[in-house]
Image (cartoon, rainbow, N blue to C red):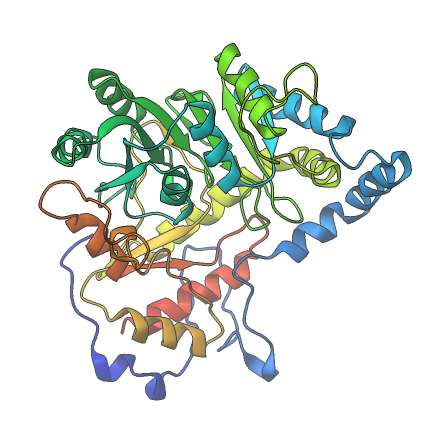
Length: 417
């Protein structure tokens, strides 16, 4: 990346922003207008779901109409069809659809009999649902650090997390690894470390379904993998939805029972404590249509990510996302690390020129009000702290127009002058 430098505060002040989107020249790109907000046009969407809707709208409307016609709104045939398609897509033996990504985590932990007295190692730099599911069952999340370059669980933190759990008289039973922003975690060493300490591994793939590591698809790592179909995810429905993946026949049967109130072969003889974690049939029908273009959309996302890296790689002060060798990401987010740059000034300058940004996540879990009394491994979590203070994500989706992306990068180049 070269020498990093701080951004000049006067140059970066919002009142001095001129919004000139200069061309980022690769020999083919054309100059764009001076500002993305000319003539009172609205800010670009951060994720453009309307563009996907224009591509699939009629097919999705027809799929919804078929559900309305057959009337099986809960556990209709589309749910089982979706499960077969999801399992085939990633190569998992079992896929179980459920009501949300958060519920997928909760279902996995319930099926693994997680409860009071147990400790589960959880990265602190992630969305709250990862730790929330642990705490809801009366177990204790022990926060561990992440790799500062890939944002994923630091395999070395597992040993520290186990030691911290034992220091608090807790039984360490498992670890949840998060594929943050769409890149698979370093699963070989993580699986080995989990096995060394007798821990089960749950893979939180809320942002990474469709990704792979050394040719192995997400959904086939760990004891069980969970994902989310929240609308803005690379594969999203029109509401909440999720799924779990496992090759363990017994665990899959338990999860299916827990999804439906703990029912056994007789639905009125509940054989375990469960919940209502079912996916609505309409959402399954929508996801089936979206799956038909999912691989194409992942290719488009990858192209957008590579264009960002090509266009922004020369800028000192921006640390671009790094993929580990052998990893293919879904690019759920394109997340920069700002080195010596005031984040709010950077975001304000871009926003004034019609470029939206987002911060995932501005506060690590161990600093949040509801979670700050839970233990954290070692003497602190420096990578999680640093990332929360320095990350910013740019717009990325399968339908980002190359000209608009050029304009985004032009604004960024101008803001760095």
